Image 1 (cartoon, rainbow, N blue to C red):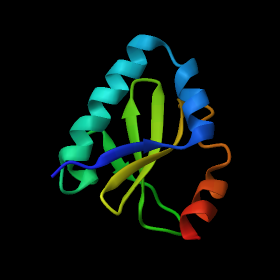
Image 2 (cartoon, rainbow, N blue to C red; image 1 turned 60 degrees about the vertical axis):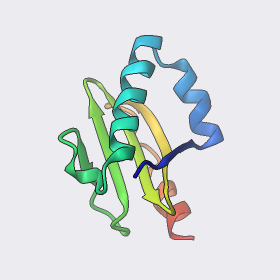
Image 3 (tube, helix red, strand yellow; image 1 turned 180 degrees about the vertical axis):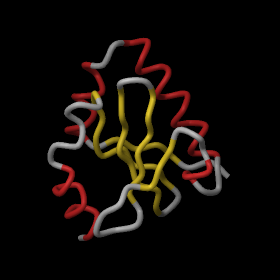
Image 4 (cartoon, rainbow, N blue to C red; image 1 turned 90 degrees about the vertical axis):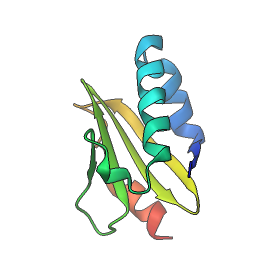
Length: 98
């Protein structure tokens, strides 16, 4: 089983600003996670606490990726450095709830 990896348009712009080597490392990790039956089984993934129980966080060094897994896809909602990535997380929860 492998999920399709999707990225939100606004997040794609942020993704493209990441260093190329970090993009490759994160992409490899996301592909590995997409093949797992349960994303939280990966050692670098954690389920975020919040109003929905379907938002995950991938941690790779100083970078974080916030994503969901649903309908056979892994959708990337936020990407960035640890310090700033969680700003606006409530907007992500609202998008997922609708």
